[in-house]
Image (cartoon, rainbow, N blue to C red; front, side, top):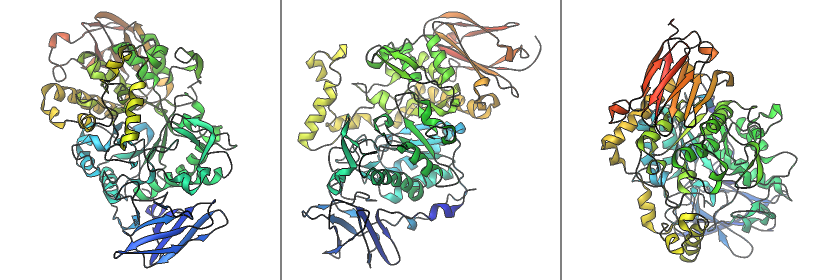
Length: 632
């Protein structure tokens, strides 16, 4: 059991927090000689000059101020701006900040011990589109559904306050403030508390590589937050190693710790860490990992999205690495998509989709380990072998891989249902950590489109930029066709993206949901599926379209998944030496069984011989078998 005192002892160093009958205000603004806090009470405006500290921060304790009080900071040029570390922006990014007392929430999760990475089955969702309510409370109402599905962690796409009424979230500018569009801070706390009661962890997506284009006031307090020495796709890079970088690092590390202490989140997914340009002697990510992992006994998880395939990011600090816990590994998705949907433009040029390459990806955790990638012409990746297989987070869909498609179309829209069931089985039976994207478990028909709600001039630029991204794709080279790409600014684009839960009443949706529940239950309850050591996993390509994934722990009954991704054919999987004592094998399920599909004639025929398993497929499908140790 964790020590609750380790969570309640949190003391912020920036922002505004209740303290001994008043509120402590502190903001870093080293270029300014004076900063005033201005607050509004009982219809009157009052201000107080903050005291300048030697480190460039300005602070004061103001008696009589309470939680709920609105305030802004006034700079010497007269600008009245929200707090860069505001805990809540009830009127949006340009409005006043509001004092929040996180200690007022009555937590009930004292017995929650957190989540081990090896037990993680992650469900990624966007708060605004997961339910019709589009709120934290809406997510809370669906927790039991997720628990019954077999999920162990929900991952909230970034929730930081953004401009407008709707946004993917990656235009966040108030990084400490949950978006008021989703509810109040205590609504998020209630979601986390309820998730813990249900046995679910909560992982939060955070963005430290850039801020959104509207309402970002960090540079008004100090231009040192950014550097023009390096550029990202979103503008100047965050200053992680230049002058005053130690204060910039401290700001983002405090942001991470505040989510852990003030909201009890169990982990953070770090967006696009390859866009964090850092030439400091101690990497920022290593500094962040040390601070986060040392914050509570339950050791929150840190998962990075990073397209470089750098094993060092997830090697422990004592082994010379950065010390993150896991990495999004997109190679699995790309191989699967190339194999079953035939995608070959953009980064898919670098993938063959062959069973041999997919097997290599599953064996290693990722495919690229130093080879030249066709779509860049440059070497990519490092040896994945220093990492455990559960340190690779893999998927067949996520918000990027769906939402960055022009039409936001899901994999189910591109391939036959039988092939979708087969790759779902491969995902859920792999030793890597699986990630599901909201709705994939029932084959949701809704796309996940890119949507924004910026002011008109910025909005037009976003729309034009979005469509220009696809100019080099064959299907959109005609400008008239590009104009059919949904406008991110159009409210209909957002509405079309909201999940339609009534779809679950359809038989096809219920059947697919049954398959996902069955596979996740099998993953959770079968000892062979709990083994993660590289020596307990064997992956073979049986032909150009079929994979055999063997789970062969020494002290448990082995399991094999034989997945055919396209076409019909008969394949034979030779039994590995680790399975020689298991000559009789029972079929646990096939993805075409009656509970999961409507065509009984599509069920593969399985024949077990002395030293091999032969399967006849009439089309894409997957078979899960378990050994029983008996003699032939």
